Image 1 (spheres, protein in one colour):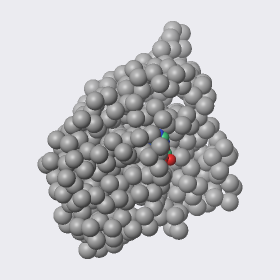
Image 2 (cartoon, protein in one colour; image 1 turned 180 degrees about the horizontal axis):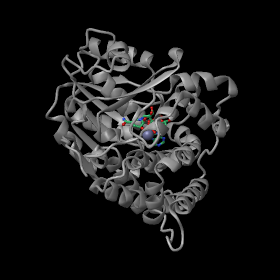
Image 3 (cartoon, helix red, strand yellow; image 1 turned 30 degrees about the vertical axis):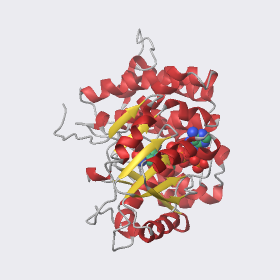
Image 4 (tube, protein in one colour; image 1 turned 60 degrees about the vertical axis):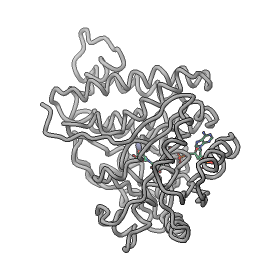
Length: 389
Ligand code: NZQ
Ligand code: ZN
């Protein structure tokens, strides 16, 4: 049964090859002192930077740049951005990049006018902002996180070996608008493309593998996952297939804009373990998830066997004839494993730079969530990690 919920999604999306044409109209609604936030240079190589600078100039904006936002953005980079934004009296933030740049822009938006230390307030104590929030707009160049249409902002504190995602409840933190042109994602290296694809897939799994009730959200999830699997197989053969890239982009947004979690419980333990792996190793987000997923799902499967059997039949089209739930559940996970290998995802933590010396810190840094089929102990987390080494 669907539980009580509210749903509000104020981000305006512009999708398609001509989506950037709408930037100038949107910019007119916001302040003149724009912070242009971007990563380590991909937008300069593929020409997006020049296009956007031209539009900002014709809109008459004063632009200050916050460049070099790294994958898994750090709190130190956040402090640096706050200084720049305060100096230039920034009243609008334009994020151009992937999830790291968009998350960073959101964290910046609630930190510029914050009188406290943003790490302590938002990431240690998980408080909501009470200060003015600087509005954020997005031009997305990498598909996966869903950050273009949610309130999440993940920040890493490398010295503390913590990578923390704050999913704010304040809807004002959502981007005011997001511009999604699937062509922009075509310059992504293959390993980033497949990491993003697995991120989408896992976001859906995190919300699907929880609860035993009958609810619309799970049916939407099954449809989304099937679309992701189908398009992924086309995209890995031809990275320039616009149809596949556009379906992946749109699925990613719906996978994590809160729709498929409405009215149901959710798990999120693959992400909790993956984020701790990321804090200790700085590995690519999607690969941290792929490396721990199968040991984790094999561990929890006996506690949610009915849903895993449904996953096998409804997502992987496995015939239920003459099979019990456990047999079906195992076949579903085998089909998932085969697809992951077909994509070329990291299947072991050792493939992404994790060493035995890191295991204690990863266990310590893993937050335990209680919405899944089994509440993990820290020893369970260790077992999952060890099975991936
Ligand atoms: O820095 P640049 O030069 O832009 O290069 C980036 C980066 O190296 C590159 N890239 C992006 N677009 C490109 C491109 N290269 C060529 N052509 C393009 N069009 O890709 C690399 C990875 O970018 P990044 O933004 O780090 O990837 P992603 O979108 O996967 O974001 C990962 C971050 O998002 C967080 C993760 O934890 C991680 O910190 N997440 C945010 C979530 C949210 N807000 O709800 C949920 C997710 O589960 C996730 O935790
Ligand atoms: Zn993710």
